[in-house]
Image (cartoon, rainbow, N blue to C red; front, side):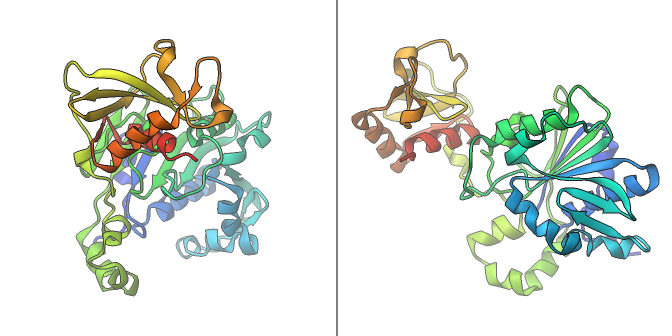
Length: 331
């Protein structure tokens, strides 16, 4: 029997971690596999699930025609499966199976009890770089899981994404530094992450498809088909040089980075002590100004922007770069 070209969950589940993350190319079967798993667990063991996406709008397409898009592919694998979605309620074979939940409006669900939920699937947990954000996605995510899980440890969280942005703030919460394809672990947080390379047979089929031909030999091919992050590894340093001078700390809505200078190069690292250096803490949004955070002057910000434009900035990691760009590009 020929091996499937699609993602196999068997190995990642074998580690028995409570938080499972899969970063893989579009179309390899990440979402299908998670859907198959939670539906099977409900049918066989009565375990209910919650399916999370960023916003209400992102969930609307799953609700269309009573959840037809959500169930259409999986019905082929289960005999006489009758799935339905009304509002936020997921019903399978006329029994309550779970919920849809938008991460961005977690506060609407505070106070509800989700004791019966044993699986949470967060689909597309890494946002597109161009995706419009309302507030901190990391804060929204943490609050969503708190709302559902409280103090419980008897559920599993499955997180799925494409390789869109190594600096994503939710990805940063996992505290895993992704390099090449493979499995990564954070035992303290209970996380196993698989940055999955494609099956060679999948690559060949993708190359022959119409969509694959359209993006062939373009930068989009790496991101959409080959599951490669599109950032430049040459922008990151391993060890910051000695005797760098700290000259600014830049804050976005929820985090901050420190800027050091040496030999005309700016080195950016995550802020490690928010109680120090209050005289050089800056924001680029008047609504964030406090007694400790000053609005950054244009004559101070412009040289930082020029340094970045001339490739004279190095970053501790992709998340630090993300914060840095959010501040310097803010209008």
